[in-house]
Image 1 (cartoon, rainbow, N blue to C red):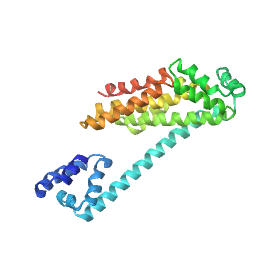
Image 2: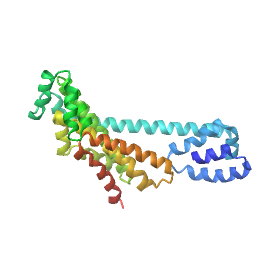
Image 3: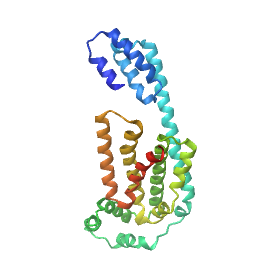
Length: 273
């Protein structure tokens, strides 16, 4: 749709011919999501000549655009409600972790660093984690060590990250044809697997939740558009791929095994064949 508008806006060819082709195109456009055809009516409002070429009256364009805008607002509200539901349900499931403050033996090192760290502690911890290829993990551990007294809050942040991960899994399953209720339940079950229980429980492992989240988003950007939607916009797909690789590299610098969730996203399209 954006390419069509750009062409109509610049072109000096016969507007009636363009209008006939555009009218046919727009009839088909109504069958696709609102966020794809909103630009047509937004541009029609901004460029009267384009509206004329499309055969759309100003009143019709404005009315349709308002309906499209309300559709997007409604969809955004529903998505926010789903994210909120994931976070609330997971908070209830993991409530025993945030009711009281406690440490596991693996967390004692961060607690000790909180009381014995010196001015070079940040450099030391980054050097230590960088030697294992986990530079970003060092930054997480530095922040946790500095705020070790807020144990429940740190675990709440991990649960929020887990809720966002569940939402991304939900979106991926929906893209590949799963029913909304099935996708919601599967996403919730995945985020209660033993590995995620450990991530949320151990302070030293809470950053791994965000490695999983970033790798899921990277997988969504890398695999879903190319395999399901079959986008032909090379520039759009290139930007998506570059963003996904940046997220993948950041996740790798938190925890490499957790980042392998990226490849799990690539398997989902094969299961939907």
